[in-house]
Length: 291
Image (cartoon, rainbow, N blue to C red; front, side, top):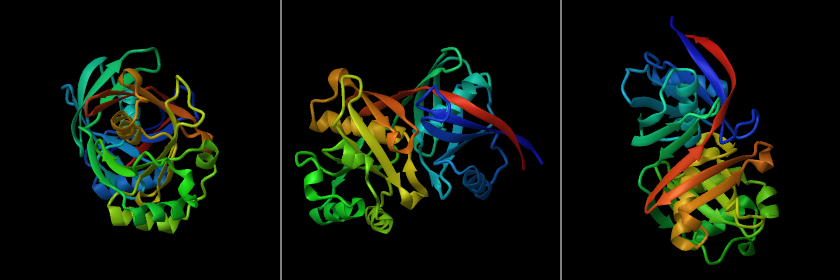
């Protein structure tokens, strides 16, 4: 039996009980995939990160699990992991590499008191298919919204920076905040498309500081609603850079989690088809696992 440390970390915030909570487990060496899945289910965050024992190099090996399945990349759990690596496990500031199912990704850690600044460059963006009119109709049914609720000039499209999302824009923040899902319709649509995550955004009530307000639903992967989603924010920044003029100086900021009472902000920098997500985090608690 090996003692392992478990942290609860809130990402994309420096205030506890806001932002997006993630579990972080260290070390994960010797744990089976089934055990990681059970631990993730027990912690019941949208994702839990499992860090392999450090080997003294600048490469860190991390796996990410929802309560239902392993995912190739979870940016908020990655920010949480590097927060723990820097504040608890002795990782030095500077340039690092994260090895995960999505590949080898550049990570930068900048010391800043108890909240290091983390920068994660996601995989090269990939623009997938546009949803058909029938699929868009089913999405509207799943969200219980009208045709007129969506931006006519912006496509509903699958975009990926390592973990694909379906992006759709709404004209009204009040409608975004009051969405009531028809869960079974959304899950079925996600299964048909092979993408369980739906990231909704609006420019309504935006500002110079906030490019868009967003919400993320992924019930098909075991996450009913994700509070603040780094993967999707990277994809959205690339999408807006392609279809709009709203990415001033190739930077964007997205506010999420308001409808859940867990507000947080994701900052993104765009370089052609690459999105770099910037975030901080705070540790909420630390405990130990005997397994």
